[in-house]
Image (tube, rainbow, N blue to C red; front, top):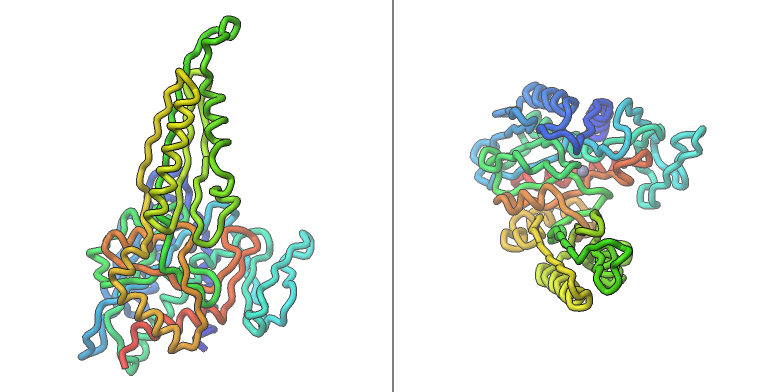
Length: 402
Ligand SMILES: [Zn+2]
């Protein structure tokens, strides 16, 4: 029953195009997101949620007051409305494959496209694309799950629960989902993003992230008379990048290993600029990587007489685990709920950032709970309806007071 309700909502939501646009400066970055936000605000009003509000920047917020006589901290649930701009999000044609029997599911015969969910999904109802678009379960699965929780709590007053806060946010996929999030107005003590992937996946940490810039100048002159004079910053840049340890790159690391990514080089024989990012779950190890990079620039400075190399480092975001460890209530509640629902879970630190990471440092501790999808941002994205239902059960358990 609940499963069917979640499915109906999900199928309706994915048909609305809401790709975000990294090149747009406004928030939300696309009109489709605003249309979807209005629709969700209307739906929240229809099901009877309180204090439904839509900000000029497309943030939808609502509340469900606590059951009479229940005193409990306000808990928030957050999902994002936008889909990734990396692949077509228009004309989504979701396909429901009932009772998965294992093996490959053909999603597009002509293009010879298929997806193969893991064996744990045997017996689940799997939703795929038709191969021409992404699915958008990232994160419309999260929205369907939260909306269904709101409706369930309002329709069933016999379920005793604490105060629940709801937010649907724009532009997560382009890294701006927390930008205009009004934490004070939201009013939750802690929250959960419902934006993780497979059943049982729970994220309580993110990377610590810094960006760096290296500027190199040398000594330029006419190449015909350059002997013993020219110091070429182009060659200094190549040398420097090549001297960074191969074992500390994104392509050679996994799990909790940190790295440096050189992602941008520009310039000429006058001046070169190298940009990149530094990522590490452990803050002291992040600083060690940075010291190593500094040492490398100093070594190259000494080796290339006449060159001038400067390194600047800028903080991007910090590991939310620092905040969650200091405020253990959110994770404690979540782990108890997962156990009560009989879910085998995998608590880990994401190799990236989430909106929750930024919200945690804005004063709202926010771990991430699975929404039941896989293969996001492309045509092979799929979702398990059963995993979505489990996610619903977990967040219902979190707010239920016995
Ligand atoms: Zn997402």
